[in-house]
Length: 375
Image 1 (cartoon, rainbow, N blue to C red):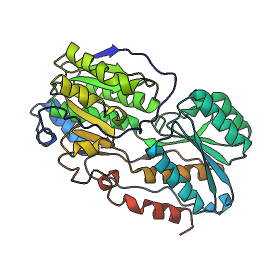
Image 2 (spheres, rainbow, N blue to C red; image 1 turned 135 degrees about the horizontal axis):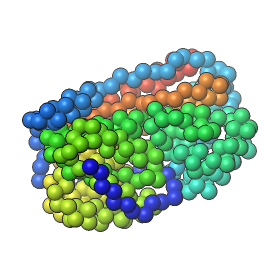
Image 3 (cartoon, helix red, strand yellow; image 1 turned 90 degrees about the vertical axis):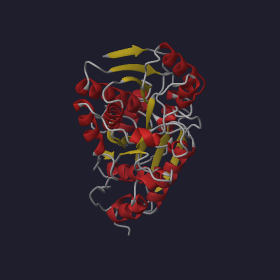
């Protein structure tokens, strides 16, 4: 069963990698105790078997080799949905990767506004860039006219972190580089179903303004419906992307007070500073699972989420972005789904860094340079 609680929706997409984790203790139940729970029902056992496949550290499969010498001297544009430390780290890696082949990167801050994003793409076109990548931006939806102008100028536009890579590409978009949003939602559902033994009354927290989070929510609901159609309930909490830093905590407090039987919450880590505060304030025992990995710092201190579906390190994502724009400029666009990993107290260790959850990821930059023929 799915219930929908609509809220005001912002008119723009947001990046799902904006803020650090919270510092409030989520409940009286430790993450270690939650991670050790073993389901007794067939439904719970099936859910556990499904998510356990994602517990091991994934292998990074690099894309096919190509000769990057043809992009030497070219310029590529990177448009961030906003500017924060995480997007800056991705851009720095993006620029570093391009520099290694003799190419240049320029950055544009979208400021979370469709008009500014449109202006950024138009400015990139005017500067005769060879390709444009938008981070956290569904460029076709937010700046369709500018994307059309780029296409007319034979400048490919790539989405990054803006929808599931398995979905059809929007008109005018050459490729998509992102973690699997649908897979993320499925893993979140499997984990919560297993830890509640399919006696789950869950909140799925997302914003329809960000396609990646909306896709995640869709997959979460479908997986719950598949495994537990009669005994489990999902209530959607669609938050306002423009006001969530101030509205998220009271919105969640209201939801939890309205239904004290809520025992599970699926969220993106952009909301992690606010939701655990609400959970603690109403003395809820709801199990929380995040997505992206920013909440790990507090989780390892015994606060916040009990589990997280973690994205690769920002440096790795930046290199994937550099690879994507070069291929597109050479008429070889390639959509890539980056690896994910599900972590909880059983496997997240003592180092909260994202890189620690992906052993070997520190070697990816050199791996890409070999793919490009420069090392």
